[in-house]
Image (cartoon, rainbow, N blue to C red; front, side, top):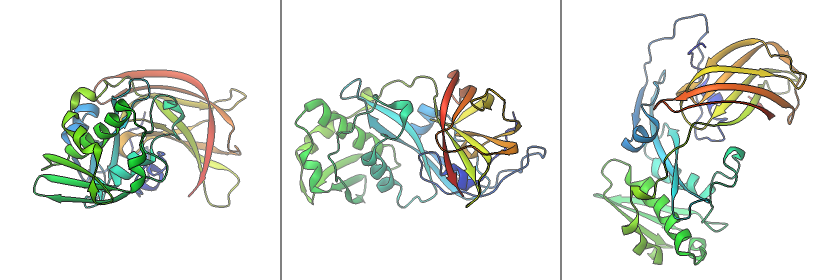
Length: 295
């Protein structure tokens, strides 16, 4: 496995996530000494380990806590990255509201307590107090105590991880919210332990207007060390090429030796063996429908 960083643009395809990056190293060359800087919250390091270095820029690793559907009131941590420190809190809350419903690997495991149309109007900080102002739709959250507590846990824990934050205040349309009284109950006891890392999906990349795919990215739910990664077509024929490790180690990238004429939805046979930065390992074999994107 070549531990080589792929383009920053490709990293945006992690559903998720939040970034657009650039630059690529050859698998046959020694990787350049990283010139970038990575700042991670203590919560990120606790749940996902140290953030892999970047080639340039200053990036920030943080956690977003999504409400659990299987254990009401509990939350699950997920890793995210951004290069914009100023908007980090608002971006995190916006992603929390958007949810992870598009992630089939977690289907049925994550709840969505925010009513449709919910928005973050403002996030402000004075001394150690962060005040988040939500749109009026949030006041229509279902009158389920566990669901409401899960929403508050997710918001409060996401915001408290940032340096200097000691208190979180929740408002709706600038006024007081009944959710505010639940903030005092939000603590790390609500965080579920993480299971082994998972494969989120595979994405074929092609040039705009092209008919063939030259790169296939296998995305994981956290930074991992990839021990094995192979992909085959529906006929079982292995796709030959060089495999790279992506920026932040969130994906494995297969540079196909021969361009492939795969269409969106084509099932690929994927084999993987991975270990996250805290030693949790996983392996698997599955038929995964291919997504196709242009760059």
